[in-house]
Image 1: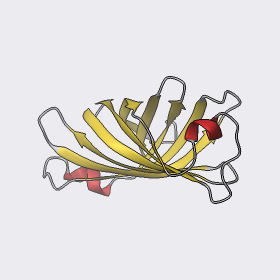
Image 2 (image 1 turned 135 degrees about the horizontal axis):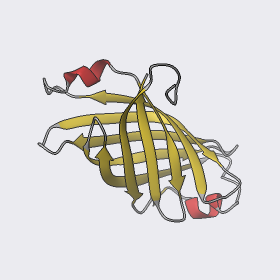
Image 3 (image 1 turned 60 degrees about the horizontal axis):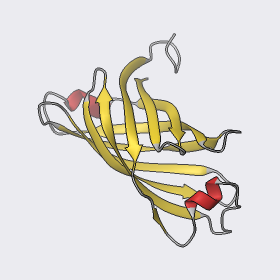
Image 4 (image 1 turned 120 degrees about the horizontal axis):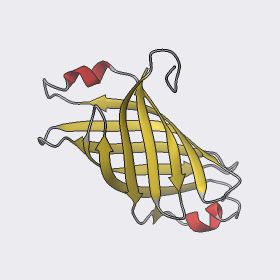
Length: 150
């Protein structure tokens, strides 16, 4: 049985590095370190980049427009581009949640992913539903994700 039930097929795995966050008036490090988020929540833009492997492979570059609500819920809003080894491009859009763990540096990730391209060889991706799961290690700045076709 696949990660998301009968018939789930692994489409990709990626490991990306997080770049420096753009903060909007509050410190993400302080909130991740245990400080309560501001009453209005915390918004940060976090760039990421790394390699994608699997049935869909290439290089991924993007930004997570992350919101950490006042109650601590982390709402993911990712936009990115996968460039295949032969130069074809696929737009990636994902939303989901980050679930803090007792180890403050680790966050479990759950994503709903949409892939879009006009390339005729990859157009089959446009109709797919992708569910992804993984983990962000905030101490090392590394994120690992596995995306499954549902």
